[in-house]
Image (tube, rainbow, N blue to C red; front, side, top):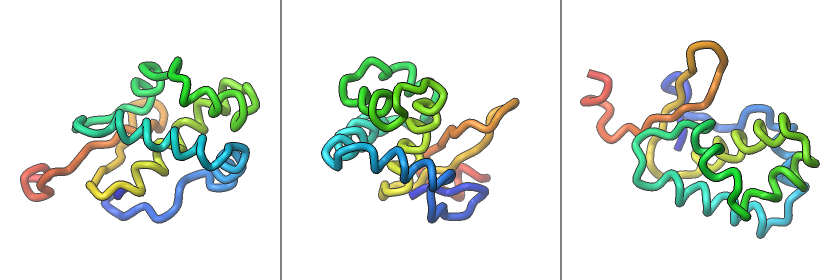
Length: 120
Protein backbone atom coordinates (compact mmCIF):
# COMPACT_ATOMS: atom_id res chain seq x y z
CA UNK A 1 0.00 0.00 0.00
CA UNK A 2 1.17 3.48 -0.76
CA UNK A 3 0.50 6.64 1.21
CA UNK A 4 0.97 10.24 0.13
CA UNK A 5 0.68 12.98 2.74
CA UNK A 6 -0.40 10.25 5.16
CA UNK A 7 -3.43 9.35 2.99
CA UNK A 8 -3.86 6.05 1.20
CA UNK A 9 -3.34 6.46 -2.55
CA UNK A 10 -6.30 4.93 -4.36
CA UNK A 11 -5.46 5.88 -7.94
CA UNK A 12 -2.23 6.28 -9.84
CA UNK A 13 -1.29 9.84 -10.84
CA UNK A 14 -1.59 10.80 -14.52
CA UNK A 15 -4.08 7.95 -14.87
CA UNK A 16 -4.83 8.66 -18.55
CA UNK A 17 -1.16 8.36 -19.47
CA UNK A 18 -0.69 5.33 -17.23
CA UNK A 19 -3.65 3.55 -18.81
CA UNK A 20 -2.52 4.43 -22.34
CA UNK A 21 1.02 3.15 -21.73
CA UNK A 22 -0.08 0.03 -19.85
CA UNK A 23 -2.57 -0.85 -22.59
CA UNK A 24 0.20 -0.78 -25.20
CA UNK A 25 1.83 -3.72 -23.43
CA UNK A 26 0.81 -7.36 -23.46
CA UNK A 27 -0.49 -8.41 -20.04
CA UNK A 28 2.49 -10.77 -19.72
CA UNK A 29 4.92 -7.90 -20.35
CA UNK A 30 3.29 -5.74 -17.68
CA UNK A 31 3.26 -8.63 -15.21
CA UNK A 32 6.98 -9.26 -15.86
CA UNK A 33 7.72 -5.57 -15.22
CA UNK A 34 5.67 -5.61 -12.03
CA UNK A 35 7.38 -8.80 -10.84
CA UNK A 36 10.84 -7.40 -11.50
CA UNK A 37 10.00 -4.13 -9.73
CA UNK A 38 8.80 -6.07 -6.70
CA UNK A 39 12.01 -8.10 -6.74
CA UNK A 40 14.02 -4.87 -6.74
CA UNK A 41 11.90 -3.34 -3.95
CA UNK A 42 11.95 -6.34 -1.62
CA UNK A 43 14.40 -5.99 1.24
CA UNK A 44 15.11 -2.28 0.68
CA UNK A 45 13.83 0.29 3.18
CA UNK A 46 14.22 3.22 0.76
CA UNK A 47 13.48 3.28 -2.96
CA UNK A 48 14.46 6.21 -5.18
CA UNK A 49 12.74 5.88 -8.54
CA UNK A 50 15.55 7.67 -10.39
CA UNK A 51 18.26 5.48 -8.90
CA UNK A 52 16.18 2.35 -9.46
CA UNK A 53 15.60 3.26 -13.11
CA UNK A 54 19.30 3.94 -13.65
CA UNK A 55 20.31 0.64 -12.11
CA UNK A 56 17.97 -1.47 -14.23
CA UNK A 57 17.58 0.49 -17.45
CA UNK A 58 19.34 -2.24 -19.40
CA UNK A 59 17.19 -5.04 -18.04
CA UNK A 60 15.46 -6.90 -20.84
CA UNK A 61 12.16 -7.01 -18.99
CA UNK A 62 12.00 -3.19 -19.08
CA UNK A 63 12.62 -2.79 -22.83
CA UNK A 64 8.86 -2.77 -23.59
CA UNK A 65 8.48 0.36 -21.46
CA UNK A 66 10.71 2.30 -23.87
CA UNK A 67 9.88 0.58 -27.16
CA UNK A 68 6.19 -0.22 -26.86
CA UNK A 69 4.59 1.76 -24.04
CA UNK A 70 6.42 5.06 -24.61
CA UNK A 71 6.98 4.54 -28.36
CA UNK A 72 10.75 5.12 -27.95
CA UNK A 73 10.25 8.56 -26.37
CA UNK A 74 12.85 9.00 -23.61
CA UNK A 75 10.86 11.57 -21.62
CA UNK A 76 7.69 9.49 -21.77
CA UNK A 77 9.55 6.31 -20.87
CA UNK A 78 10.89 7.95 -17.71
CA UNK A 79 7.42 9.01 -16.57
CA UNK A 80 6.01 5.65 -17.62
CA UNK A 81 8.59 3.81 -15.52
CA UNK A 82 7.77 6.00 -12.52
CA UNK A 83 4.04 5.44 -12.91
CA UNK A 84 4.50 1.67 -13.23
CA UNK A 85 6.63 1.74 -10.08
CA UNK A 86 4.00 3.86 -8.31
CA UNK A 87 1.20 1.46 -9.33
CA UNK A 88 3.26 -1.56 -8.24
CA UNK A 89 3.86 -0.04 -4.83
CA UNK A 90 0.16 0.71 -4.45
CA UNK A 91 -0.57 -3.03 -4.74
CA UNK A 92 1.96 -4.15 -2.14
CA UNK A 93 0.87 -5.43 1.28
CA UNK A 94 3.56 -3.49 3.14
CA UNK A 95 3.22 0.24 3.78
CA UNK A 96 5.23 2.83 1.86
CA UNK A 97 5.08 6.63 2.02
CA UNK A 98 6.00 9.19 -0.61
CA UNK A 99 7.76 12.49 -0.16
CA UNK A 100 9.14 15.16 -2.47
CA UNK A 101 12.66 15.95 -3.55
CA UNK A 102 14.13 19.41 -3.17
CA UNK A 103 13.59 20.96 -6.62
CA UNK A 104 11.10 18.80 -8.47
CA UNK A 105 8.60 16.23 -7.39
CA UNK A 106 10.15 12.81 -7.46
CA UNK A 107 8.70 9.70 -6.00
CA UNK A 108 10.87 8.50 -3.26
CA UNK A 109 9.23 6.11 -0.89
CA UNK A 110 10.03 5.03 2.60
CA UNK A 111 8.96 1.78 4.16
CA UNK A 112 7.30 2.31 7.52
CA UNK A 113 7.87 -0.63 9.83
CA UNK A 114 6.40 0.95 12.95
CA UNK A 115 4.57 4.24 12.46
CA UNK A 116 4.90 5.25 16.08
CA UNK A 117 8.67 4.71 16.16
CA UNK A 118 9.34 6.30 12.77
CA UNK A 119 7.20 9.39 13.30
CA UNK A 120 8.31 9.92 16.89
